[in-house]
Length: 157
Image 1 (cartoon, rainbow, N blue to C red):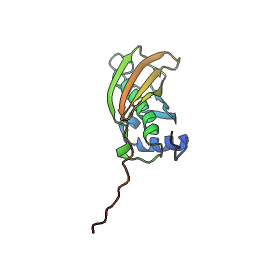
Image 2 (image 1 turned 60 degrees about the horizontal axis):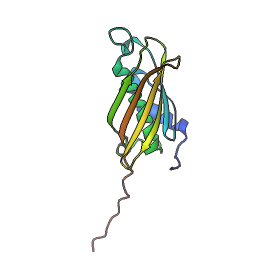
Image 3 (image 1 turned 90 degrees about the vertical axis):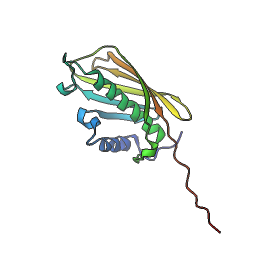
């Protein structure tokens, strides 16, 4: 495993700054912790995240879990803390089981990388309510980009 260029705390501060003005910020995801192969986030219930019955909208839960998976994958693919689009782990596929729902409190998502291949990562995310009841389980397959090789110039002779 590579040695990160920034601490987990510095990485989280940078990630929160990058999220400003995005959907991540607008629905309120908070990045709580990150480290080798893992990440934890939180999301408070608010009416703008609800579906018609007043509970969390499935799309809000899925987006929240995907953001958490991406956070764990970002640490794995680019722990330097620099925002480098060529190293961003794009989500290729999601599989989600929505097991229960709530209309209050805080959701916590815990992501763990369960497979690191040559070109993909598989990240499992468990989403809990504030009573630690399992709300959703997500599996994300993400592109695992590698840093591009150093460019060399050849002399024309």
